[in-house]
Length: 171
Image 1 (tube, rainbow, N blue to C red):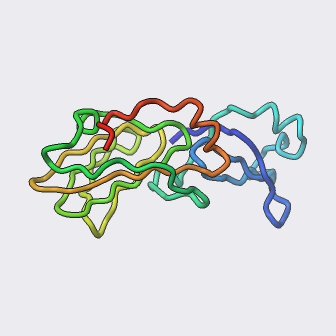
Image 2 (cartoon, rainbow, N blue to C red):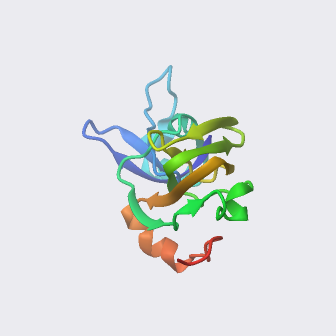
Image 3 (spheres, rainbow, N blue to C red):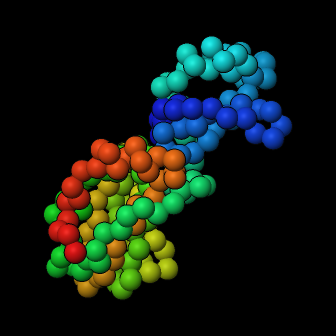
């Protein structure tokens, strides 16, 4: 999946990595002839590449990022109370991850391209919601579940200022 570069950092070896809008980090080494990224070595080069997109293989693998913390949770839904918005294709914002936690029963979890797959979410196997990836859920009979939302801690004040009303009733 394509992700925007939102910042940079250096690891303990001094190698540069990009901070992506999905909360993953990705190394940007300049090691010619295999990796030709001379722009990584200068601040002006890095600044010029802010906002450009990179493929994020960790998002492709639905891999949970390090350092994200929970900041909000939906009410517990049943097969009868699942909001229409969750049954239709929808997505979280950049940098917002979700964990679909089934308490009882099973839930079908459909992810749109580029993931383009369907998963079964059970109490033993939660669903991972990747930022900006359109998805929907469908109950398989009786079910009880909730969704918990995560993001990097330093983004909490910024996101709260632009918070929208959730598509489920307050509870």
